[in-house]
Length: 259
Image 1 (cartoon, rainbow, N blue to C red):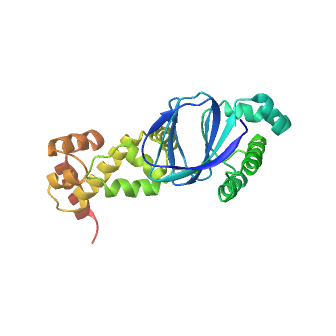
Image 2: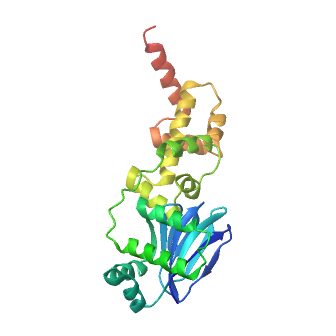
Image 3: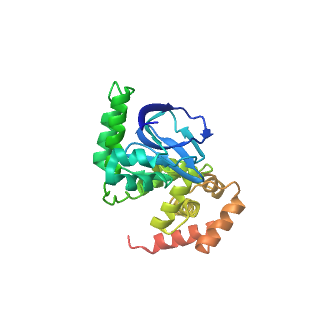
C-alpha cells in the first residue's frame, strides 16, 4: 500500500473503528470531533488529527464537515525510500495520537491538494501525500495557541443565564472538545468553567438586585436558580449578605452620594 489521499465527508453520526495503517486527518470545512484512545479533540481548518496504526478511534462530524485524509502504510522502509532522512520524524509523528495545529504553509498545501479535481489519480495522490509528509517532517515552529474568546463566552453566559449550562455548551463557543476546553479554561482563568458560570450569574443577580425593583424570585429565575431559597443561599455564600441586605446597602449608598 502506498500513501494515498482522499477528501471525505462526515455527518453527525458517531462511528468507531481501527485499521492496519496510520492516518492523518486534515480539517477542511466544518469540524470533526475525534476521540483517539480516550484523547478527545476537534479537527477544523488548519488542524490535524494523528491516528496511529491499529489505534481505536471514534469520530463524528460537528454538523456536516469534510477533511483531507492521508492513509500511511505501516512500512518504515517504504517511508524511508519516499522521504529519506525525514522518515524518522514522520514515524515519530505517526506514533503520537492526538490533534495539533498546522503551520500556515501546510494549511495552504492541504487546501490546494483538496481542491485538485484528480486527487483520486494514483500518481497525483502519491506525490501529494509525499509533499505533505515531507512538510510534516520539517521542524515546525512553535505555534502560540490563541486565547479563549472570553468576551464571546461572557455574552453567551449572559444570554442563557436563566437556563442550565454545561461545559459542552461553552466548549462549542470556543470550538474545542469539552475536556480540552476545561483544561484551557482552568489554565487561563484559574477557575473551572462551571465555577466561572456560577460567579457570573451571581454578579448579574447582584446587579439586578441593586439597580432594579424586580422581585427576588424573578431575579433568581433570570439567573438560573430554581428556587428563591437556593438563590439566597448562593448569595450569602458568595457575598455574605441576603438579597434584601444587598438592596438596603445599595439604597443607603445611593442616598449618601451628594446630589
